[in-house]
Amino acid sequence: MCVCTMLRNQAQFLREWVVYHARMGVQQWFIYDNNSDDDISSLIKSLDDENFNITRHVWPWIKTQEAGFAHCALRARDSCEWVGFIDVDEFLHFPSSFSMRDVIGDLTTMTSNVAELRVKCHSFGPSGLKRVPAKGVTQGYTCRMAAAERHKSIVRPEALNSNLINSVHHFQLASGFEVVAMKRNVLVINHYKYQVWEVFKEKFYRRVAAYVVDWQEEKKLGTMDRTPGLGTRPLEPSDWSTRFCEVVDTGLRDRVAEMFTDPKTQRLPWQKQEKFWLIGTR
Image (cartoon, rainbow, N blue to C red; front, top):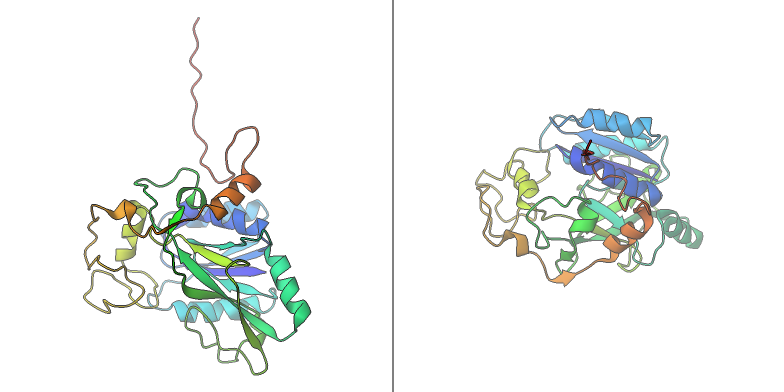
C-alpha cells in the first residue's frame, strides 16, 4: 500500500501523517512538493533516514493536480499494489479497528476485479481551538460536519485506464475492473479541512489546487474548493473557531492516543520536544 500526496508548506503536519499511516499499513509515500519554502526536504530526508520509504518530487506548476496524480500513478505501478491519493490533512480512519491490510484482504478474497475503493470524507472544523493543537490534528480537532462530503480513492495502479484520466478524486479504470464504495463504519477519511485560522488562511494563496489556485481572485466562487461565506479576502470571521461543528467525533483521537502515547512520557511520537531548564541551588 502506497500513498501519493501533493502539498505546499505542510512540514509541520507531515510527521504525524506519515507515522500514523505507517501503523495503518502504508509502506511507501510519494510527496509531490508544490513550491514549499518551509524546509520540508529536510524533514523528508529525516523520515527516510528513520526507514520510512518516502520520496520528494518537485512539482512547481499551479492548477496541475490531476497531472501530478497521473504522474504518480505511473511511478507507483512498479512498486505498489494499491495507492491512495489523499492530502496531508486527510487521515484514513478504520472505526471498526481494522487496518488497510485487513480491508484490502477481505475485498480481494471476495473478488479479484476490485480495483478502486472510494472512501467518503468527514470534514472537521476548528473544534473551538484558536491555536495549532500541540498534540497534532488527530488529537485537537474533534467536531465535524454531520454529512459526509466527496470521496477520495485508493486504486490498483495496474488496473487504471491507459490514458490515466482522473478528476483528483478518482481515476478511470480499465475495462473489467470494479469500484467499491466503502461503508463509513469500515473505512472513512477524517478530513481536517477547517483548522485554526492561522493554518486555514494559507488556502487563500496560490497553490496547486484543481479548482481555484488563488482564493483572492473573483473566480469560481461557488466551487467546493472554497469555503461558504468567506469571500476572497483572508480575514478571520469572529466565530471561526466554532464553525463547522455539528457532531462530536472522538473516534480517531481516542484510537491514536491509545496506539501511540508513550506510557512513560505521555507524549506522541510527532510532538515537538520541549526544552527544560534545570534550576538548582548551591
